[in-house]
Picture 1 (cartoon, rainbow, N blue to C red):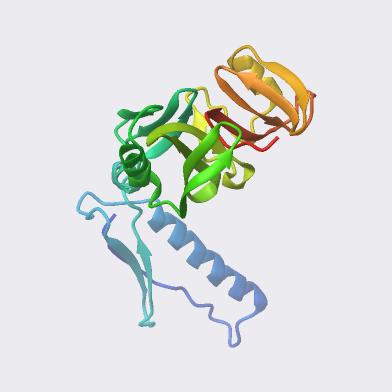
Picture 2 (cartoon, one colour):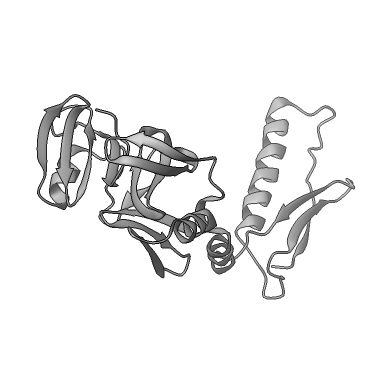
Length: 230
């Protein structure tokens, strides 16, 4: 089918058009639009536009061609940025090509902050000399609830609260919002009632659950040296 098709409208010979004629014209227009949308001639250019011209009417209906699936996938890959995964011994920055850079506990503060900032942007808050149960800690808070802790100039721990809405997770896809059932499917879990609530330990990480049942959801997560107030 050519990229530009002329469709001649047939008019009734009656002196005045009726409601049936109006519906017939609308149906013909809809059929022509659907037919043209489903066809593409061998000479059509990718990403181009097709149009129908009605005889006796200068108006055109312009229908842009959809972008190829391959182009959409390529654009999505280009727009995707690095992601941050949670780990019991630090954090991981996952690049769009799948490669990962581990940000391990013990790494110098400046290096750890720089690597996480490359994925999430600069910290929204930083501070020093915070008195915690583990001693004096420094911290860097990033957006969406992720905080890093430093001790003696080294990356020492992280914590995550419920503000992030499930953006961060472990390699086993455990994060805030995951259920106790999902947590136990990923490995052994210990639980206790503490001053913080229903506290659990799993794979070197700790956190809080909203309820003890299988549907109870993780509301907070942390690992390493943190400033969790008890």
